[in-house]
Length: 425
Ligand code: SF4
Ligand code: SF4
Image 1 (cartoon, protein in one colour):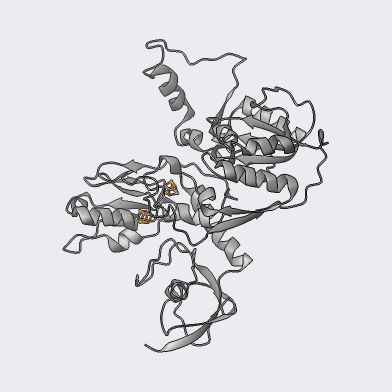
Image 2 (tube, helix red, strand yellow):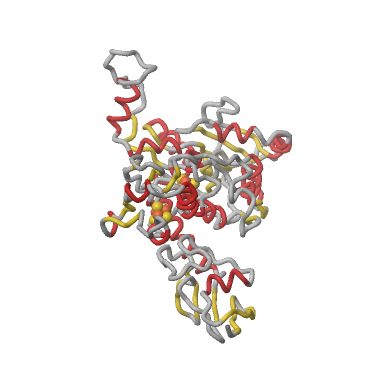
């Protein structure tokens, strides 16, 4: 094969003529993210579009572009990073991704792309569509909520006599991956495990292998193309709040969440001693101060909106805090409480109060009183109700991550966040 000269982001490299750009870049140590392509896959699927690059000034998917002599490629520009991030954000918002409850967590390519791109929040509203889970097959269960329609399983999974197992059904927004139950039952154990590994997300789970790997042994636990992310305050905040004895004022609240983010805040351990030198807590469950006695520089909110009281409390924080931070996944997009969003509210209430094993059996009563906050139709992230300035990801966010980001926001410092601190599940 002939060698050709190409330029990537202004630097000279060599590649084999006709090689796919994704593969040529990878061999030269440049990672172009993709969710459908894997090395030597031909023809490329080109379904996810995450590898979008610019070739001689034109947008092209790197997995379908063959290199030629003199080619000039842009990969790592702010425009392209934003474009790729928007695609991945769309995939998160379009499916139902509850990572801590997913057997693929830690081995999932979508989740890893999210971490690597530093995606704390999707710019798109979450759809929370009720999609089917299919447990009927002998070897797999399929969660259609997590499928990103990459087509890998359709292209690659087959029986020894080359019969397809997966195929696309319906079209457009209604597309889903169907399964041939007769053929899937004929797959060997190795073929079943390969199908699960092939799926970049947790849509195809081998029944015998869910949650089989312990933390630290999963594929992406320590491996990442990105070693750390840089974080700095977006703007030098012109705080209206007044300092108290030279300390910034912080308020916190826990809405629809489990209080785990606050527990993580307390896990800063000896860092708490530094913290109290620098900040004073005002309204917060940590101090048990119930009302704002002064304006806060920063308000930190854990949990999403699941009822009218959550919403009123959130509005109060927005009015009384200069900067508002969403802490953890429940605040960012609803998190685990949002698992109820794919089930009708009436069914949730029935299950909790009328059919529950722990309820008062036979007492057909769903509690109602004017003092009880009105439950919302769905659980919402707090950005759906008020303007949020920053998002700290995690379930819960790691203590170091919280402290680094809060420091950067309050004092305008630039923090390097190691991949391990950003990664959660
Ligand atoms: S780990 Fe599971 S829930 Fe999380 S992004 Fe991957 S497929 Fe979705
Ligand atoms: S089931 Fe997995 S491999 Fe198949 S199309 Fe969906 S995401 Fe891709």
